[in-house]
Length: 106
Image 1 (cartoon, rainbow, N blue to C red):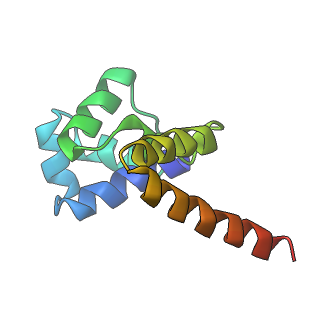
Image 2 (image 1 turned 180 degrees about the horizontal axis):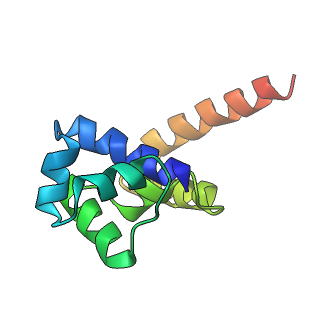
């Protein structure tokens, strides 16, 4: 799960945290956080949840590259965004998507 470690490192850096700071916030050692980020170790479920909570990211965001259902998750999220739009906006977006799909078939 090297990509999990990369995602944790990415979000840690986005939050402006050093490994030492993240480690302290989740009551883990800096060497353990480093090992997770390098893909040498996988966090326990409890540690994974603690890290996700501190970084304020969902498990989907951290595990996205590992999940085989990533596309399904994205489609669900897209559907939820579309539901919030009025019918005219939905039609415009569907038209754009149809044109893009048609263009890729060439």
